[in-house]
Amino acid sequence: LMRRINIKLKWFASHFFKRFVMGCTPPTVNDLCVLHLSDNFLVINKQCDIAINSESAEDHPITVASQLNHKFPNLADPSIMFGFRFCHRLDFSTSGVLCLALNKLAAKECMLAMNSRRVSKYYLALVHGHIQENSIQFDKPIGFDSRPEHTHKMCVADKDYCIQPRKATSKLIVLQRGTYNEKPATKVIFQLVTGRRHQLRVHSHEIGHTIVGDFTYSDRKDILPYRMFLHSYRIVVPTNLELLDITTDDPFTEDNPKNKWCSLETMPMN
Image (cartoon, rainbow, N blue to C red):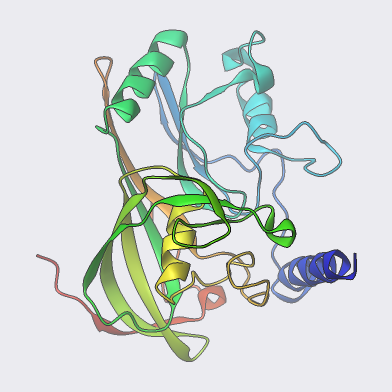
């Protein structure tokens, strides 16, 4: 019980710091950034710290689904829960490209592309420490963390407490090495090959370079960053209806003082 209380206190302390010290305002129903809209697909730039949907209005008064229903009531389908068909998911703390299908055929086409591994997803991140390698491929299966006090976590399969592991493959390329808040950090781009829950967060943590601001996988210690520094940067979805190739701006630039990021070395791009 005391451990749960301590976790809750740390979580509230983190959100208090974000809102009242860093000046981060919570999302509103009007904060929806549209990247692409066609007859078949809607692609948005999801904010960080917002759930995609929720059955609890008390826990999540504003969700991506409520933003969508507010902005596009004419596109909502009353026959499905929350009104919209999400082609994939993003964690509460992850921002960036999020794709929705606007009809059953588009949803089927997107599902077929994902099941056949024809969809490419790229994520930007800042991680703690300097990664020495310029690129890494992760091929470590990921499963559920069965420890009672870690019910929301995932872990790699070689842990004794890992259950129901599934294949998980990610690719990492170092973009820059520098500092976050004057401490060593690395900016990377991930390519997500499989799509397990918390996959990039677990793989980063496993090599000793936890994502900056990841409250869960820092053992609830990394509470001062104003956000978790993981962003869905680009998605490519080839379908018979249309080719989606959507990219966002980089939110982790040096010119935003909240990022506290300073690049010291930029890797040459091949």
